Image (spheres, rainbow over the protein chains, first blue to last red):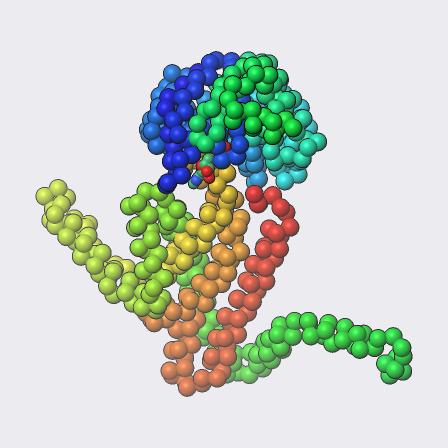
Length: 241
Length: 288
Ligand SMILES: Nc1ncnc2c1ncn2[C@@H]1O[C@H](COP(=O)(O)OP(=O)(O)O)[C@@H](O)[C@H]1O
Ligand SMILES: [Mg+2]
């Protein structure tokens, strides 16, 4: 579904990503962990071309990412993204947030878009918040609307960039539950997170990044019980305590 | 006075009263007093009645110039503002050139320049184009026939004011667009929207709410600056005043009346702008 080959991304003199290769199969959940600044977000953002790679190649669902704007928009419509800061549109209600891209990108008519939007709100557990503005929702509710907004586009892949890092502890679970449900339904997902419980339960593969490189990649069982690299062990001892 | 000598803190009570007194909008009171005095003059003093009648003939022109120029300025400013945040170097540089030229010129000089340099230059260009296309359109086509005289001085004044304010509004719109967090554009793009769709549906609706108060203030400024069209002989209220003064030498009466007319319009407008500002501030959903 996603193939990344020798991805390099530099910001001026900062080498954010130093040659990353990664394959995500259909239906797989890949969790990326690593210390802050290790390039996790940059890898994710290169996948839907929010950042332009310095070099390397990326395929999404057989389509190669190029600089062609039409292609990029087409690929982005197939790749849902959930941000740490939610990034809901504050001037639109929850329902309108979920309907807008369906209408202008997917060209669905209003009734169809609304039906899908309501179904997605149901799926993330807050159908009663359809008419609320983002400013009237808690962080956890906002993030669930953001997930519903991405899902309404029927993406083939979902990318999550630390979706629970900006949430109060009591709201983390409600968002993780939605994501677990999604993983069980067979969605292809790439998740950057510090939630080790989620990584253990939902991931097919865990990728550990440090300093712009993939240090180690393995199944959750092997990764947590039997890490191969010294750097992984050090990181795990810090986050698992 | 007995209270003052009591053991409670009289100075703070007194201070309170003085403070409240000091906070009253005395300026408005004084202004209204002056206004009422003038109103009384308009009703009782025949000279003032005549002057008011004369100046009122220009009011339609003043309002017309302000409204039309400002509407065009909003459109021009929006386009130039989008150009100022564009990543396309040609668009960005053209927009920046325009904004810098406008900001660097006195508006009065710009009005002369548009009226007597740019408008004729535009028409000689059009005429030249007409000559060039003569084989296609015939020797006396509408392009060769077009003449600078077709555009009245009123028209040139409106164009000049519109493009002057377009340059100012460009910066207002640029600031408004840049005040919207980057995450909004990224979220819109990640859903597959094009840059222009994201601008139209996500960024601009939020930016417009933020620039409404500055736009309102600029509208008031435009009303005042519309008086500059009098230098082209356009008969707005300022020009009517100048004409009357030239014939009658009634300086204080005429300019009192003129000032009264501008102030009553600008003060009402600034109260409206304040009201809009307060209402926008109250409902929090315009902000990210
Ligand atoms: N837009 C940017 N401009 C400059 N440097 C950036 C930018 N985005 C990320 N970086 C740098 O790239 C490195 C990797 O960042 P990031 O991918 O956000 O790491 P992570 O998500 O793992 O915390 C960091 O050193 C960061 O400072
Ligand atoms: Mg990050």
